Image (cartoon, rainbow, N blue to C red; front, side, top):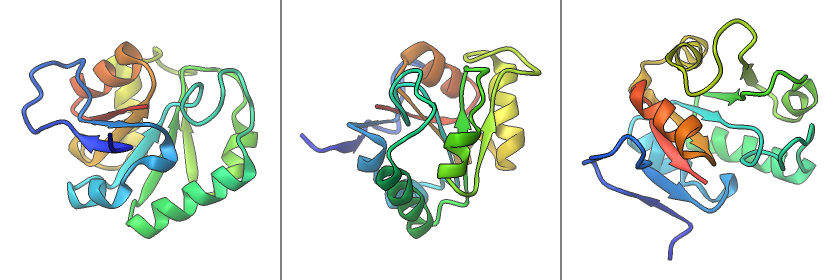
Length: 151
């Protein structure tokens, strides 16, 4: 089985992701760029880091930033339900911006995903949400018009 694959253009279910991947470094960001994706929003716990961790592996963070840049992804966000300080992770990921539920409801609310869209400065169809939870990450993103990648 491939590490990354596209499901289909016909998404009959809002719980069905557009893509599946075994990890954030296994996503084909060039393919996403070819499909019109310009911004990637990453869930933090269980996706970018182990749950509750405030850092990620240095080699992994540098590699992820380089992969996104080489693929032509213009913007990268951390879209986290956590209200904890994410500054250490942000420092490991130059150019990333955090969207957290300080001023709006958490995922999967429409207001959270509207904050993702506003922060990205892109149309919803140009944003892909990468996460590990069907309800918070996949359903929330898709009902707001974003593509969704399940890790």
